[in-house]
Length: 264
Ligand SMILES: [Zn+2]
Image (cartoon, rainbow, N blue to C red; front, side, top):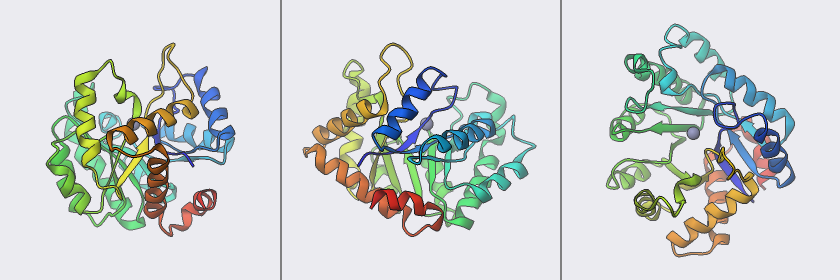
């Protein structure tokens, strides 16, 4: 079974023409999809998309780049964390912030999410980038929040073992395997082969927005094949590994009963 642990269906990354195609493809091909949000309105949208298919599960998050706009709304964030199934996408990333005013507020906003994750044992899809991977990991470890996914981990390869030793997952996928982007591909290849097999999970993240658009049912097998090639195994084994690891991650969380039923 295909399980995509990180996909953006909201306007910023998927327009009104492609989204219905993606959603009907997800439903038709029974691809369990964790729809990520990047702010409150996109979370509200993700809640709507989840009504269109039982395979879509919304996650609530506000990306660090939006922290300035939310600096006076942490209470509102905390309230939504009380009802969400999962958290995502959240994180810490100063380098890629278009709105540099977000920088002083990124950590305090992330801490609102980490407190909620600790309190409710929520799954988190975390974005640590631009040299903050280690500091982000250290901050995460200071909380008693266990169900962390470091999404598309981009830090030093030496830290992978430490992340895995902590029981944290790492997800890979996306268009990063495009052979035309060789240096980037080598970078990810190395990291993908180093993640512990019990802690590697798969994601699409963003569907191509231009003419290259392909629905999830076409993108996902390509990701599985790339990862199987990199790890010297079969696509069947990678698909099974992903399913096994996701099942372990969701554990006995009663909020995720519906997902567990679809998976077993
Ligand atoms: Zn993302």
